[in-house]
Amino acid sequence: MRKLHATIGILLMISLAMAVFSCKNASQKDQKDQQEEVVIYSGNWAETIAMTKVTELALEDVGIPTRMILIEPGPIYASLAKGDGDIFLESWLPQTHAEYWEKYGDQLDKAGISFDYASTGLVVPEYVNINSINELNANKEKFDGRIIGIGSGAGIHKDTERAIEAYGLEYKQITSSGPAMMASLKKAVNQKQWVVITGWKPHHKWAMYDLKYLEDPKGIYPTEKAYIITRKGFTQEKPGFKEFLGNFYMNEQHLSDLMMTFENMEDEDKAAQKWYGEHKELLQSWMPKEWLD
Image (tube, rainbow, N blue to C red; front, side, top):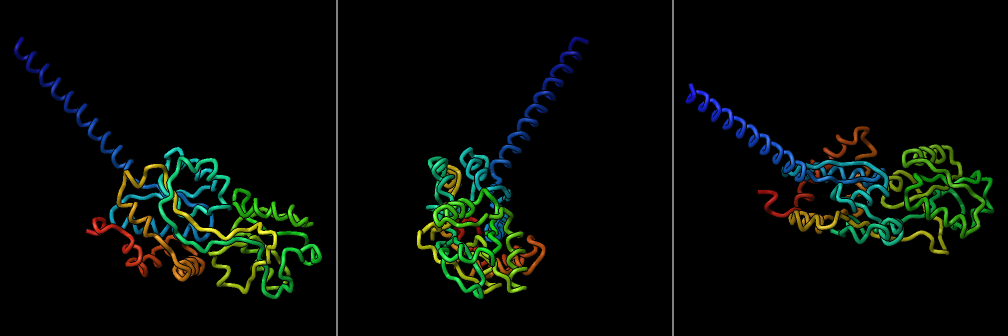
């Protein structure tokens, strides 16, 4: 009887040990899977959403689990600095995101340049017969004293507040969103009304309408580069991304086509799949060979 009890005890101990080992392995696997997932942050701007979605598809296509998170610029930089995510494809420097870079830049890495022809400014339709920010006050009534802007977290919003002060503009910046700004522009153009918006390139509005920047003699609005930034040490931990992000570059034609695809399709995921299907070779040409084996 003693032997039977001893045998049962040994079997119970073995079962318990196997259960603990199994749980430990499952836990380690869960942690491994979580660590392998690449988190890409996106701001709520048309070109960033489009670039991020096709990048997500490209990485998933070669077996790299990827998740896109849409948040405001400030939290993007803070989250990357804390190591909560991995990549942001559109850090506008040296000016638009200067505030965030000054605060978090030493905790982040620059890994590439997604495009280098970024610009911002005050934009009007071509039929508006003024050409400079200096002419806005004389035409205040035609514009209803309003500059149609986007979210207050955007760098262009802060630059426009600086422009209002620097030029002594008798205008109020209307805080809205990218889609709301586009709706205001569309309505004004259809009715040939005067409207001034905060605008930037690249953006699909330039392909949709005849627009122009107002001249900015005080140099408030910059011409910049869109850097790809990552959490500190990301490309050292995942060396393949050093090559991929270093090669990543959207020329004006690529980005224009991408944004128009998104503009012409209501479903962003389907738009991303369509454009990626047509440009898969381009994105894979940026990848290390081992990803494609």
